[in-house]
Length: 559
Image (cartoon, rainbow, N blue to C red; front, top):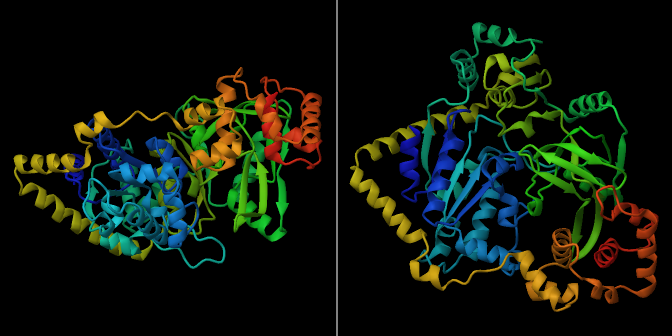
């Protein structure tokens, strides 16, 4: 199927699975469709299963968008709690198209959970009749990805994660398959044929010899190559070596922990932030947490532009300058915190795992596949590179070149379905197709009257600012906004960064006098960082954990 045929099918409003080999133009089609929807005033949710893929699309992770976090299932009561969040309720009611990129890495149970959340909350949607009876609440679902790439990863102790096409909601959605066959990433035919041979599980001696011709060869071009490893232990070793090559002072940031050791250990494993983060100016880093408020996600790459004992500034891959704050990961039960860790959400990134590379396009890469452990790993790593000359291969094993037999079988089904979809499209006249496009827009785009009547809503931070002007307490603002106290604190900190003169001294009365005095003295002792703001972590350490972190944040707002 061509890109234009896929776009024509997407514009009908049908649920679609967009697939094809690496470099076939899947992302291009998505971007064109997103541009079309936005021009027509249709609200579209742009998401991906990974943070890296999400940043490429200018969106967020599906887990964050849907409010499900890492959950595999939620009770109706828990979904009810989600429905009480104004931000999520508004998002679900207004969104008419949901895009999920890199679908191969989304667990089948999580696709079913997303369906469960949307069908429950979107009941009675104003644009779709009986939306609660329709898959995904009547939203047009667009799934994009390639199942020849890496499968979803199971957490320790969990059953084996299955591909998304095993989900009941996949079947219920009646997805039209658009299988792209053009090639747009790889710049030479030879390399394209190599990748196709791996994909078809048909690597012969000639193909293998071509790959081996890049053994320990320097990648062409001036771009600094990214090193891809199969395992985290090799990634960590390489990153430490690269950090040692940079002159200048090394700054260490130790993770703070609280709670039951077993739960703390589980948090440490899941968050990916190192117990001890070592940085220098010039270090290549990757974010390991979704931070929507600053536009960074799990997988966002950058370079450390400034660091000292109290602050870190990163220049992201797209040129933005970001001040990085410590983040908190928690395990809560019945509203009580059972375990908690605090650390800067960064790790070194000269080398990254193959799993983290999925969704990237690289001009140059050094690839080590000697310890590959999963089918599809070699295909993912090698297809990140645009040309054979851009590849340096350190080694490869048989597993790296293997393809999951189940994927080979279902891929044949996808191709046959796509052929039928393309044939059905060709049997229709241009006028008939355009009529379907118009009908979908008539359902999905806001009506003109609704546009005029709809009041312009201030941003969520601006709304918090208005309530702060009334000198409401943080708890009272949180109740009025149906948000958590910590979220309101985040808003107030953003406001102070943008408006240093914004007066929040009235909040002093919300902290006990003795506690306020101790914290203020600690801030005075530590002083401001080189960037001109008071750091949190050193003050918390100075107080030896005697004062709650949120109290320290409140005091900082009032200084």
